[in-house]
Length: 253
Image (cartoon, rainbow, N blue to C red; front, side):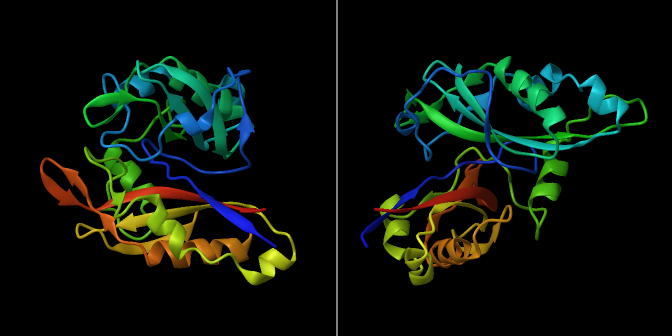
């Protein structure tokens, strides 16, 4: 049986955790392949992370029920910095989804750039909802976010001025993927999301699944990622440790 493998990389920006991907807000139909995944400069909220924080309203029902947690949304940002579409990737509780979506929708972004030109880009924006004694939302600082997201080392940036890139591009990772024979025989397809920690030299320090997915596909994705070389991320002209999410789609043809 012939098969093909598609690759997508997303970047973590704010904080998060949870369930299956769901569509939201009757989005305009966009051609997702038009939105780049790896760019020279990722989209960033105008006004910084505090701008999203300011736009978040903790749902009353969630607060009354003591519900806190994390929501990952995938935003499709166009060349003007506007949001064309948002999807919920994972969520601790559906009560939090709308608040996370609305906060991102209200936020203006500086668009992603390639070669100095604005481009359509997709980013993953994880948002933490945490109840305080005052029962107000607390979206953690970028430092606490790093601690919650970097499973093994809090020193890894969630977002850097220049994000890590695959040496040789996506095709280099593609060449290292081996579709598991057992998965092919059983007709197993799907996407797995791998949280990858990359050090200052561009080495993969760890690669771990972000949620429970098919173990056959997870292992194949992790093996390929660990064999891949990266150009390290940079912050203020210095190479730094950065974490990225690499969703890898396996599709039989």
